[in-house]
Image (cartoon, rainbow, N blue to C red; front, side, top):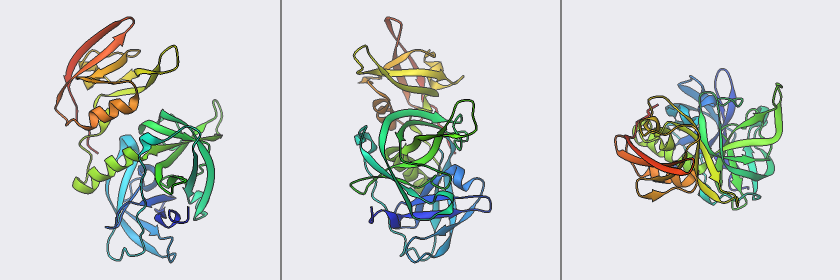
Length: 296
């Protein structure tokens, strides 16, 4: 824990405060888009030395609620975090949420990974227009100001970026013990693209234009990706996929769960013709369409 906390900084704009995680030795910091909002520059409070420096927002990606900030000049006090492979996240694994809830810097809460592969987004507080696939659900307390911070394993690796909490049905309050984090694999993919070109051109499952979750068979084992919604004019719609279908293969790659679908899409460039194999009732069908490109 002590090795990760110096990598978690406080992000402040004229309207809000939140958290961020130092990504590399070049002064790049990853955080939530809803933390920076429309700001082009922010104040970054370093943990080491408790100094405040100015950071420039170099890129953002709304669909995953992520943004990258770059601190120029003296970055000696910015210590990069080590990121885990979020595909290795295990239900029941102990994790720590690090950030600056309610402006209380360097705060740490403990919980477990309650679930993986969740679909969360605009219906949740703080989610904006984001639709986060494969989100990590955790019981670690996440409060306003934790957003953009770090969900950390006992191996001192960042496995996710805490982003939002669930809302109680029909009430204004949040549900205690139900928080969500963007998986580290998504964070690295988006951050690397932003750092390289200032935008995201290959956004993973967003290219299909679906809302989805892992489907299970009668024994509880993963059995494909269940489609919860299909955007009009999207790649999936062009391939004939409808709400309620279950995707079982992309081109020649079998798809047993949401992570496998994302991995298959990560290897493909926008504009590539793909064939989606999907089950509708007892029949497996297939359709082809070009992957779309979503840029921030």
